Amino acid sequence: MFSNLKAAIQKVTSKDKKEDEYQGEDIQAVIVLLLEACQIDGETEKVEIGYIKNLLIKKFNFTQIEAEENIKKTLENSDERVEIFSQIKIILNEMNHNERIEVIEMMWGVILSDGVVDDFEANLMRRMNGLLYISGIESAEAKERASKQFK
Image 1: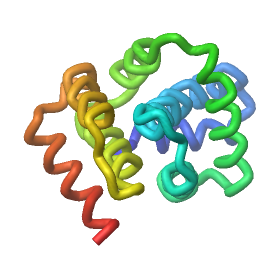
Image 2: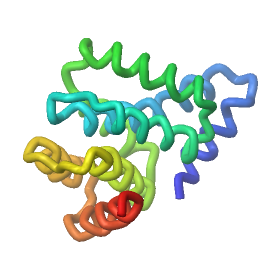
Image 3: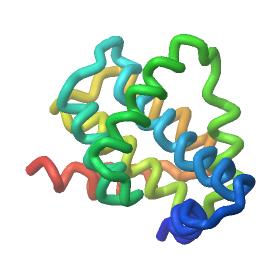
Image 4: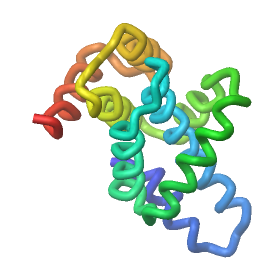
């Protein structure tokens, strides 16, 4: 899974600037969606931010400092962002179906990390399923996998 993202991470070590910029774009799109899941209920909780930071460290091989800086930068830019559809387009163009399911699973993890799924969060996930071409069954399975971390 995440073969495209892993390849992109490997490109970070290359000297080609275009590859570095490309790498940041697809991972940044995932970070935007994760933070959207964190903030959709009107609260940015420390447990959700901590969960996102751990995801960046474990799944994308960020250092703790890199994870914190990326989260901080994305949160600062969230006030300027009026839509997330450009991020969806990046993900659709760069990730295969299984990788998009993993993104949904990560988003469910963020939502479930505080122990409450409110109506705004459930609505966001229904919209994300449609936008990322993920079926309701696949999303439910991703939610179940994500919930196992918190049992």
